[in-house]
Length: 331
Image (tube, rainbow, N blue to C red; front, side, top):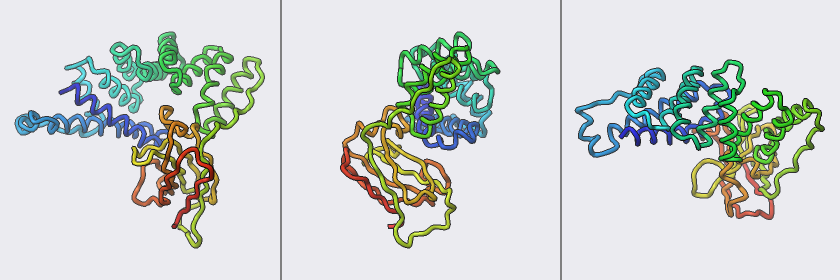
């Protein structure tokens, strides 16, 4: 029962991590608290309703939903004391404690996860990041460095492993090594991130006495999209309102395989979606034979669709496309 409940909570965390991703930069504590509370709520509901036995025992043994983040963390700690073999539980506890800025306790929780699953890249990276935060200086000690190197060996395309390892190497006075560690990320990130990453790489290369890297060529393939507004279409929304141009799997999950973020002021708009615009390295536009393309105006600015969003009718496109996709708002 505990095993399944914690796994269910972990699955909820994964979904919410994508849904709440746009809020991450501005309110990490709130995002983590939301994830923990809803994740534990899922586990609690399964405890009550997940099995016929749970239904029979519901009246005899009622489980109360945690009232706040502290109570949720306390409940999770108690569950792990009863069954400390659940790596998902230790990961969830570590993320919750990071949200509360309890870095030393978070590092301890992730260290338990590493003991249980020492060859899982995400576990190793999360543990190393928490250990760096717990150090106060943000520097990686020998253990954190070892975990990051092992994570990158296990999963060379793990972006966070590569980024944090490069940070640790530069902090250790190895700017040339850091620049070489970061360089493969240029082919994995979107255009805006690519520019800032290139600046970081070239700063490190300058520290090492190396010439700067030239900007990488844009990814080949992809999909051209032209976004316009219908004649007479107008809105009272401000010019800086967020506009998402989205390609997703037809009849598949709602998560995009490629997305770019723009504003209303940029309309009419021409964009080129490619693998660099994928929010998930494992889901590439170039691997698909058909996509559904749409544009969505988001007054809230969040990736999760809201009731007041304005969207164009989705258009199915076979890849590779021989012409730009035309999307019109207000049709």
